[in-house]
Image 1: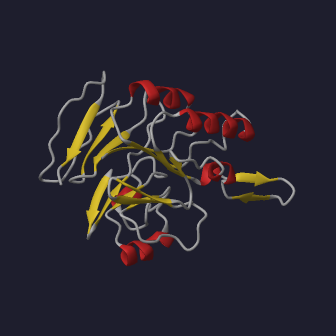
Image 2 (image 1 turned 180 degrees about the horizontal axis):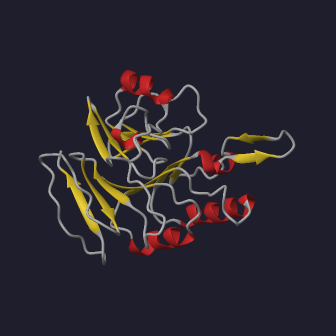
Image 3 (image 1 turned 90 degrees about the horizontal axis):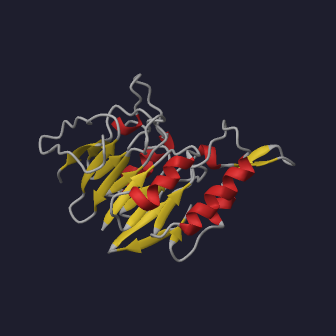
Length: 239
């Protein structure tokens, strides 16, 4: 199974429009949160309606979790609530916060950014913020922006892969630690298409594809090859 992993669109409609016609071939789309943009000019309810329609229309199976920008504001209670709008989109082809599905023999668990406690048994976790104390959670500035509430559960359940986002400029887009592979494609807001990772679940090999420059990998087995997209660059990690 080929997973296409993306994250942190922040209501960039051009990136959403790019996906159906230009994304690489894939069997499962994974969106690891922050589809909306709390700081955007478009009112939040209109963003929710637009993204919800896009998710319903997407032609391939999808696993999606909520990020901090995807929460809903309860004006009466004056507080942020979980992304109930996303949970209402669950369907035979769309799996959302709190759902676990088995595809091609692998279990995939979507973990909401508001879930407490986090995690349970599954081969692949889809989360917004990556676990703290990982390279994919560490910004280029050196600050750890990961989720400390995921550190213990990862040790306990040992998922094979954690697909994440939230940190737009991670020091590394992948890290293998113990039995778990951590992935975060990052985000470049001015790019013509979103950073994305292609993960082959058969051998856990993966590629990061970006529009701007070649990502360097320190994996001694890594190979770097050009891809078909104009001005796109790719880094690959061998299993």
